[in-house]
Length: 167
Image 1 (spheres, rainbow, N blue to C red):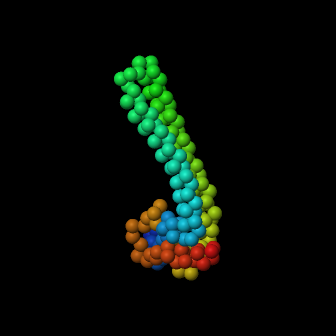
Image 2: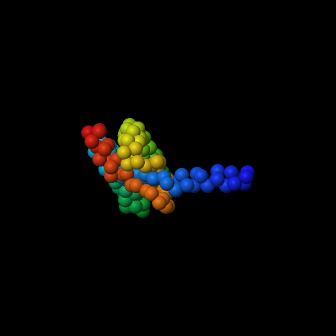
Image 3: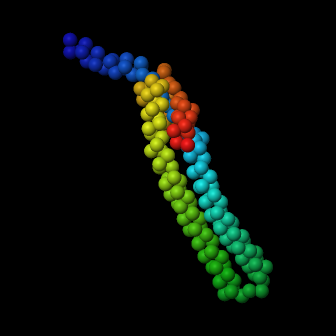
């Protein structure tokens, strides 16, 4: 009798799971498709382009210094040549640090801008999941479901609902 009870206890969750409908949503696709997400992407691109101009300008200045050094290499003494090489090296290292700082700044801005969207998105996902009659919803890129007998992709519905609710 105890064995039969144990078997029933083990099989019951499997039958419940088998009847479940699993929802999935591609959050990344939602973020790049909704109007608010596009506005964030435009802001980030503008900031990135500004930083990129600064980097390109400094790269050009460093290349010019390198070309000048090549041209003057024959007439410069070793001490002057070493000084110019050190100057180029220092500017290059400063540029690398500046570039890393820019990357961190852009990443920080992206997180800052996306956080309120993600918070609002949770409610929309819950609403759409309930309307669709799914028992649970997964983010498809971070927790990909290889197979589910009853699966619904809610991404398009979530995009529509988000844009309707948050204009």
